[in-house]
Amino acid sequence: MIKAYKYRIYPNNEQQTLINKHVGACRFLYNLALETKMGAYAINKTNLSRYDLQVQLKDLKKECEWLKEINSQSLQVSLMNLDAAYLKFFKGQNDFPNFKKKSGKQSFNVPQSVIIKRGKLSIPKFKEGINIVLHREIKGDIRQATISKTPTGKYFASILVETNTVIPNKKTIKEKTSVGIDVGIKTFAVLSNGDEYSNPKHLKNAISRIKVLQNRASKKKKGSANRKKANLRIAIQHERVTNKRKDFLHKTSATITKQFDTIIVEDLNISGMIKNHKLAQSISDVGWGNFATYLNYKSEWQGKNYLTIGRFEPSSKLHNKCGYLNKNLQLSDREWLCPKCGERVERDKNAAINIRNFGLTKTGWESPKELAELPTLVGTMKQEAPMPLGSE
Image 1 (cartoon, one colour):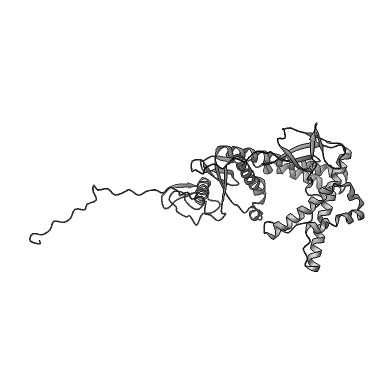
Image 2 (cartoon, helix red, strand yellow):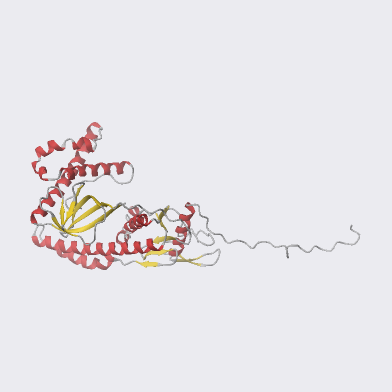
């Protein structure tokens, strides 16, 4: 089983400079390779592979001698990442690769020769080990590491480890140990058993403070030290929101995966929903995508089943008991009265139950149906009218 551990590292000034050089060099090579690939296809309709570009690294280092300070394997990983981005684009899984910005994610990968010993992280090109805080023990063999820097100036190392543990066999899918999850904005998640998790709204609670800090930063002179300090305060607020959100999602997903053997969710088009400017901020704040990811890999680790249903299934409009389809249901309708059976339907709980039933149906399970009263011998004979005399 592959598992990742993330630790805080404390590089000295010299090491921080070298980390920044690695990040900048990998970004430079990625952008240069992307430009080269685009140019080759535009001129000669030729698709350059990462191996074609990798051969040119030796000559590039002669032209840009500062690249010799960088771990060559980290540079090669940049070409691999670009190749992977192209592959996802041609498979329709992602948009066309974009040029990386200096203000974007700051990280580089070390695919080999990663050693942790006596509180020090040793990687190529760093003669002295980097101080690392191991807040939990690493169990397994270290494969690779990713060094990253946050906008607040903190440094982290994500260590990828082979734990040498066998993934347990999947649990048997049963109705009693299955749960459907309907996620929302007003209520973060409603389970088919009736449990609810309220939306903590981390960003909404902090947005007023962030706007004040943004307003102060906008009044500072561009490029000045005061503007950098003001932007740092904004980044710290965003980092707090992110940490709170991740903590909530991890705890919620862990609770659900421990409680149920089969977890069923709806495959939502989150990227499409975010295009609605009225809901974009609320959808981004709630973190549905990360929640689904956490449920997926935690279920895999524990031998649980993680199932998804199609995004076009009528989970909210279909009454889970009588089967009535409410075609006129609006987003604002949190409850509705079923005209067929007269029962008052709670939208979110009804959707969660339908998500569970749809998911189980895909596995061959049939939802229980209300049986009509069976006929009996007694009382089934109809009394016939007396026959007139002499009719025989």
